[in-house]
Length: 410
Image (cartoon, rainbow, N blue to C red):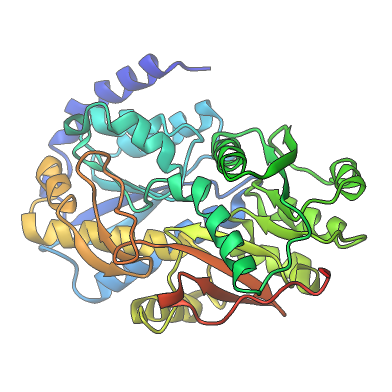
């Protein structure tokens, strides 16, 4: 496996051969790093679709600053370091590459350093903990790298007051103050689970189970669910983000459901989850940071969703709209700078973004290069699935419907 120093060195070696290439080009290439094959292929295809939708729209409008655009995909497959590095190097080695977009590529986001070494525009949505960890010690070294997703701190902390608030309002009967959590062994899933354990414990809840499974395809959750049924918690949490895994978990939970609110991190936002679970997911809760804020108070979301559905025949999850907005944020900055070879100037212009998007208002924190989380910026959103539809119930100012206690709960 290549180490990070070798990867950065390889990227640096490409810089001189690239710098003169695309300044004279009429076509600027936009790269997409995405898992278009492997277990997260549903996410990867959405990323490509969203970026392509924006490229098509820009080209149909005559391009930007005299340039049109072409999309180039770098498949990261199962997101091993070697696969991500190889895909990133291929995109970075293209002399006409103006910017690279992704929802997520690697679990650690190590490729950010490859992008910064070459002053490549890199817009990313996932794994904001890792993004912040890389950038915050020296943000000036990463002037071309920006994240549409805010800090994941809200994932760790907000579930407790939301659950307790539902109980206080009489919308949720909590039989006890016990919570059981299961995660898969990857930075996203494990990091959120660790934060949730602390938040529930600090609030006086008993964590009855805190289990970690190897990351990958999981077809049988019954051993864990058997333990749950012996000591049912009021809240049952699964932070595995793979939609097929989460769908299997929910289907097997419904074989003999306990009196527990089921919360699944991220996966229910992927259309595949609803296709696989159908009525068995009715009642499940999930949340999103940087997800599509599809509410009448943010008409931009409906606009983007309608465009995506018209182009591809299905409603997207989070990453299609995210990549669509990433491309347009880059295009806005390019329009102001004019020359795609001036990537550091374009990166600085991206950092000044203040734009209404499908996810809310994007503004960037200069200390972390993450978007700012707030109800006026990018809010954390809590949804409940009922009868195959998603209902936003928190925060109240954006809610499209109320929470309803799941039918399996007493």
